[in-house]
Length: 528
Image 1 (tube, one colour):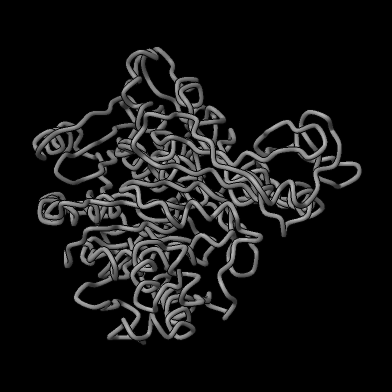
Image 2 (cartoon, rainbow, N blue to C red):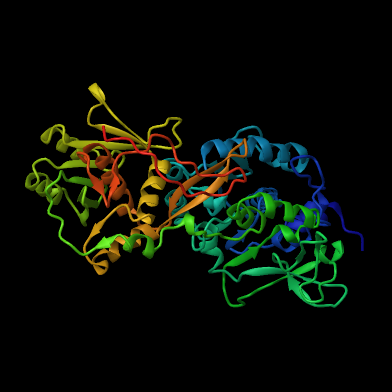
């Protein structure tokens, strides 16, 4: 029976695969979407499970797939959607470089779209797609949605992602799709993936007929630079890797999860995988090539790193005390001097902070400038020359980790966030910061340090940039950092566990010529 044009259009509105075929849909560079090399995406295009998580390496076609699936869902399912990228600039580049080009290459999508050239939103019939960044919560509060698509989740600001989730509260759909190359276990896309059915792509060796999913190094012959079967060790043919099926690890789970690795991709030769393995850092190889979370010892702070600094002895509190405070609805603080940190805690108001300031008449208070604004300013006026507001800046092009304000800027200190964080953590790991008391007294303190982790991203020049993130409460980390900044200026010489308390003359060297992480010995200068 010959189908009419209207019949074909009806069927295309019910199936993304038929939609791609019927309208000859093309990607952003004008190539027709087909599945010869992307057969693993065939089922993924048809998956409209409300909650999905795709854990993937870089450059495997996921953004193109999700652009088209989002357009399909908005047009044919009547959904309003929010599509997020890490920053507003990322969102604009994404829409200009991918979304608008896909629309321009496909007449049927052009006919749907009212605002073809805009970069912040697309009206598809009566419904909308909003393209947003995740750096401020202002954008997250302006629109509602039925479907949120979180692109590059692990590079996004997690608390803003949570704010976008509230935009689904008035919808009866509440769909969320997460996809990204992962960073560390239990964070970002991996946090959702581990709750999913965890589908893996199983292929069949044409020589021994054994089914397997691709993994490194089991499926790579490092000597011949060829893909091999895990079982018979013979070379896997290209067609063996091209054809497979998704197999659920957990059958009863409602979240649909996919694990993609570069080894699945027929267009990527084994020699390139080996090249990445030999030339890139371990973190890059795991996250960007294998699509797996990576936790190296240098990327986390564990219980041992912190508790090794504990010394059960009395701090006589004879030298100047510095209080570091992370402000907000709750104030988290630490107190210490050149003999170490001797107290930490939290309070709902500022009474405890003021009590400390009055008890220790020469104490210095360093607190963040982005939390509570009113009360800290009042404290600055009440305790002149003793209260400093700390502002974070990221990757400042300067040799100084901390710059203290003078003149009209007195009462402020500007800190290079990531380098100062790295500096303090290195000191903890080297036992340079004493924690006064028994280990069991510092267990709550440890939990905040266990909630931070470091990721590595390459900039446009291929230079690794390491950034510290959080996956839970990390208030005491920042309070300790503010304390450490205060100590760099007000330690009155002396030492913390026998090491000078000042800042380094030069920035630490993080990489060797091969891009591998290095530990380093600090170069010191005297306190200002």
